[in-house]
Length: 540
Image (cartoon, rainbow, N blue to C red):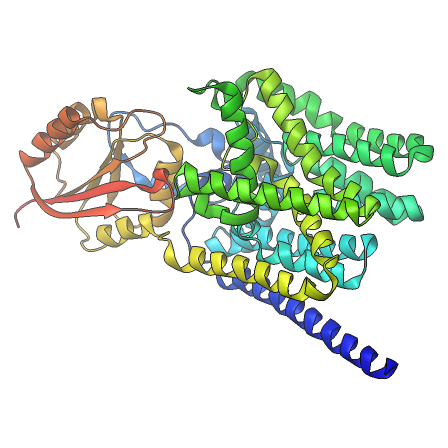
């Protein structure tokens, strides 16, 4: 009888492990297979510009046409023929961060090195974030195994590998992916230090804190989390933990003195400023939307209206609340403390700071600014599922199927080829062409420059809609352009969308010499991707 029960338990365990292992493999495959299937979005092409070290050479387009190839050159490394030239490029990268970029240097320096090794293709640039994410998945297994057991590590890793929010950011050339790695690694190292201090874990603990702070400034919230966990879990050794955290802070000091202070002088903090509505309700909305985006809808939040993401956040919050109550009753106090410390505590900390400072950082970028709380939420789910005993396999399967379904829909149903379509239209003819765009936003300009081949004879005239008709009329006078593409942006970022009158004025200028040949509505996954493309041609 005992043998039969043991065999039955072994089969169930093996089946669960196969399920979790398969989910991890699928999550990794999703990343590898989609390295080059989507365009760089607005922020990613800015990461590329900064990583080349040529940010300072970039200037806004003025009221006269300029060759688009001049911008394309800035998205590659500059010509270098000596070590001095390489040092100058690195200096340009750091100085470019001073000029209005609100992030520390580690991510951009890492991407710069990767750019030197593998080039600036989509696959090359995204392969480094994917590697960060694979490190996060491996670390999730390590933390889950350390805190509970082998299968808990597998479940935690599977949830992270398939989570829609993290999958998107794993394919995103921004600094958010490694934050998850530093968050998981720091807690794992802390637990190892508590049980048995070793040099490798001391180095890992210090390095993960320093690298986190030098990747994203809001990682400071996570340092508070680590300090609280150290005090709660290992109060008698608080001094040793404090010394390690102090060393980590001191390692960031050179950049804080040389870089952070300069960035603060140029920083655009208004992006987190006043919004219309009741402040308390807006902060609660940000909290719910962040939880919803992290745990359910993922990058679909950029397309969906506020309500679905908000409802998803409320559902996820209720589930986490019930899980917390269940674990408390099950007397899982240690794991519950760590799970809540990694999830609820930093969320509430950010919420309170936002309320106090009257800023809105918590919900910025659909929750990506606090992506380091995601592992804590998934760890809390892991602990709760593992406590379900006989039903844990069904619960794990349902969550993983939900995540994989959302992933598959995101990867297959959402258009991400806006500027490819512009490039295709440009290459239909080799005649000189002018692109007139009612946006000077550098993300729009550089996406055009990246996807349109520099060999194409294309000039760009980028002006706000209020000035575009005047500049366009002057540009077309005595010009030899045979084709003009008018790109009307749905979200020009730095100016207002075109009014009906401004649209009519631009159209009137174009129709003096050209006739409308084609019209296309270009759509992507967010408002920044919305364009109305109109191709005007002269009679042959």
